[in-house]
Amino acid sequence: MEYSKIELEKATLHILKTKKFKKVSIDVLLSDIVSENNLSYRMLLSRTIESKSLNYDTKQKINMKLDMLYGANFGFSSSKIGDVCYIDASIDGVNPKYVGDPNLLNDFFTFLHEMLFNPSLDSKNIKEEKRLLIDDYKFEYENKSAYALIRSNKIAFKDEKARFKYNGEEEIVKKITTNELNDYYKYTLENNKVDIIVLGDVDDEVITLAKKYFDFGVKKRLNPIDFENKEIIESLYIKEKTKSNQSQLVIKYRTDTRINDKDDLALVLANTIFGGFSSSLLFTNVREKESLCYSVSSTNSRYKGCITVSAGINAANYDKAVEVIFKQLDDMKCGNFKDELLEMAKLSLISSIKKSGDSLSSIAKKIYSDELLNDEFDLYDGIEEIKKLTKSDVVRVINKLKLDLVYFLEGVDTND
Image (cartoon, rainbow, N blue to C red; front, side):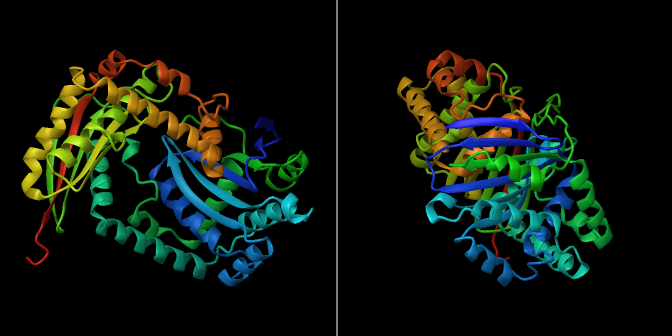
């Protein structure tokens, strides 16, 4: 693999030349700082842009064009990474070298350019995409595990930007007018940081194509690390009810450790032992041994400094489930876990890092995150550091955790 970073006049081009894949992928990422309005507008905008353009004004025409591009895959998505939100315009397809089509790479660029720069942002199209997005918000409520995470974020991060959902808010989306979305589209093209990521067995032709089609935006440094915090004087215990056969338990801890901090990888390992893989303490003891939940896991939000435990349980098991989850953390704080588990967690993490090199999308995400963090791109970054971590490192960082919130979404009889 050969990585290069090239500063164009306005955008930044990243090229990873590799013969590992038979495909070529192109991602154009438009980045800005997280805000509630940005997330709502960007989600509606990305979906509207993806749906049709002036020259491809139906789904059928888009699909026919993709078929002509040897079955290429295309899409627009909107998400966030820490304190940065982004729109990802992407296309991937067979490497032109395998089909003997010297114009195919140019065709990938021109199609993506057409969809991004000639979108159909008329009132009819926006109204339809708005309707579909609002339907998705309704589905979020029906998915109780997702809804519990959303509610717990709103409570725990009440005065912090981390409370904002990556896909925006229904009340904001409902009020967006055609003119406002068109104005926001123009603002995005003119004021966003732009990164172009090209992966595959390519040559320097991609530099010319990137300059021609996607050298727009502005040069600026965006920091994705969310430093907002709060002093925890007293942990919150919140119970709410919903009509469901299953209840949801969410427990949030503040870690005071963020990505690139000296204790970052030790905390990643600690979370893996706690609830981050199939042999974790939570899975083994709360689910398998005590049978207190349908599912349980913990996730480490490295850009925020928060570990979240999520579990699907029966309402009657609430007290016992909380007690046993707390015990797993207490045991870790005292070093009461086997060395074998420590080594298994290390192997799981290292395997996950290595597997990321088998996916074009995972590689693109790593290039993008390293760019935001102002780090040198290293696909296998962290492996050697993880190997050196000890039990005392895990115990040290896990003792930094502070209980922020215990949120219980109690399922009540749907027949009531």
